[in-house]
Amino acid sequence: KKRKKVGKASAAQNIDGSVSYTFLDIDGVLAPFGGGDPPPRPANEDSSEFFAPFDPDCLNRLAQLVSRTNTTLVLSSSWRASPSAIDAIRERFRDFGSPLAEQTIALTTDLKRHEPRQWEILRWLEKNRLVDSCWCALDDEDLIDGAENRQRREVF
Image (cartoon, rainbow, N blue to C red; front, side, top):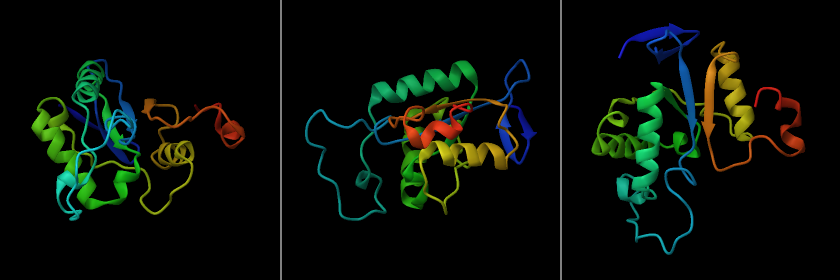
């Protein structure tokens, strides 16, 4: 992949020269809720089995998105706050193979602030001077409707 410096973030450059970002939530997106009891998990958070399993169909869909758009993933999930969780994501992406194995998960929204997700995403875009860039958010939370989202609706 060619890399191009854009703002403060480094991202993959598409064939046409554009750069795109995908803000990725994990719970409810790659690790869906419902559908029965989760498998038993070890008490040790350092084990990747501690974290909810990823759905293979959801991983395939994410891989298609990455492959077709050459997007750079930005972790916006609460998983970003745990080094063990990030390691688990990297391990699962490696196990999946290309194109997810090539994602570094180096880019995340702010680890020190936990606000409504759309505010965190907007803050990341502003910090990296990328508000007008091409991006999307894969999230099970409603990022558009509701009073708390009204003031940032033009961005979303």
